[in-house]
Image: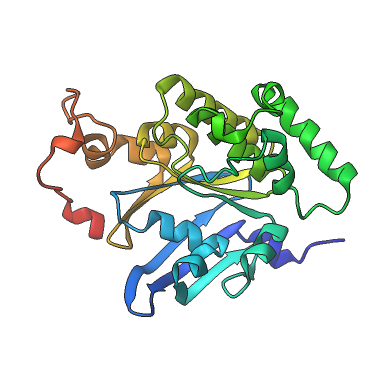
Length: 274
């Protein structure tokens, strides 16, 4: 079946002038615009409380769990506005969200967790096919398939959650803080996996405090602050930006190593706001 020309020419995801309310009074996002291209990777950077996780939840349909709602704007996926669709409809359409905090089914085995991820597949033969694909992509999980998920390490749990998302056959993967609390070696393994999935055609929208890792993977990035986009550009442009170097990459303009957590005042340049 031939897709409409409008769908072909549009970005895979286009968030347009998005406003989000919590409890009908708290304005969490204020006119957020962003895109993810087909096969591309977009990163969302910003301090805690900036609205990054809220943005992902607005796209995936999980706002309702926290008494949130889209008050204005649109979430267009393949040219179709999903903002009034429920979460399951979005998963079926190919939008899958790996939330922050490693929400594993702790008392089930790794394989049982993965089967849950494939609950929308029509036949058990499809589930088995996806399990085989996941185990080929992440051999570590094949060795752990009978292990109770609650006994996995943090890094193994994160691998399993990405694999569980893969079981839904996503076209767009939203992933929130995949490296949180992980050792450097495990962080590298997670990002190697994400790069591999991207090379296979999966599109990514990633929230990540480790800006260096995120910008190495992404081709475009946005910085959120106070529920607004205050800076955007290619990953290369943001890596070269002095503010990003100082506050997110841990470098001062002169090349000296610098820990941005020790900075007492967040100095945002006027050009960020135009």
